[in-house]
Image: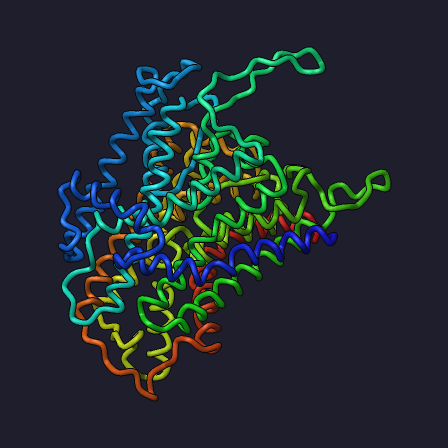
Length: 564
């Protein structure tokens, strides 16, 4: 590693961690309807939105009504997006006259963007019109992220309120999350990306002749606006097929740094938002410490692995250096590894290199980041409510060890809450192990695998892990654009999204009803180093015990065959 690599890592953490406390307080004030410096700008727009939708912002909802509103909104979004990509040849802003998607692929695309997964079994510039990219994908990039933020806020209210029967209003939370939480940051980032060279145009694709005299079509489009929200909303779907390895999506070292930092900027800030809800920022610092510890463990392991020479190239004629195959040479090994660690720690899924070319140990790190439920920062809202589920599991285990009824911030965890926690622990195993095993044994599904042996198994394992974790990245050696994979991965995305959201909202409603007991000297503190260690071990053990056998058949077996 060179001085540039160390500078990149330091700049990345500075861009993420320094603004997070301020941004976290801003989100708390926004979601609770308090006045902010953006209120004069977006306040009138917010009121117009409520008037058009017929929503009374002063009326709150029970967790059941909040859930029904969320499901109705997401179902409507799915139907609209499915129709847009299926019939795009009849819609405007299609200068290339691209046809609509085949119905199973349209289903997969609609589910993918509604669930904040953004898995793509197609190349955007060759498959989707400008209208589909903007009115379909970009809109869902905003509202799917806002949905996750709304669910998190509902859980925060459930933990912090006493004897309450309501969790807020979903329509109000969605509106505020979009207007104040996502739109301003996206406008700033989109303008920055345009300055760096990302296109934002409705012009036709450009026909050019290369220096070798070969005809080439250069795709254009309104890319900057979608790239901004794909990063800040932890969505990850690329405007172009090769995602952020494309020079039009990621043209410079500066765009690479700011796009990478944008992936986890909001998830880190929301940890501090939670601290403001419970009136104890020590809880935020403890959760951040756990997230950073897991991030550094994974990132350090991946950096070590990617800087090792490949024994298969052990020859006196070949210089033994870190292999660059599958990496964008503009960003180098460190830039690729840091992006890989970041995008799989969040439910983002954007890539600036080929994950299929990663060393087996690095691929295992990416898999583990997703298998633990994408709680190492995670998606907008989704990452923190996933982490809070692990916090409650750790509190439950601590209560068993000390012989007390487990409680968190004065709220006792009883049979109902524990049952809901158990439901969430089954989400990833069902999505990864059950659906993945079906794909592994069907000959028609196995035909999509491009590599034999452990690496081919890793391709299938990665696909279902990415779908169930709502990540969207891929090893890219798997031909996933088949009816089987389009439908099965779509099912995995639905399980991974709503398998968490529904129990989380039920848990929020149950906790909101409880009275807050005073925290005494016998209460287990959830803000110190001991709890951070317990939480970290809990996350690793739950994920490790569940998925270690599959990892042994895939990346671990492949790593052993390399001889290091």
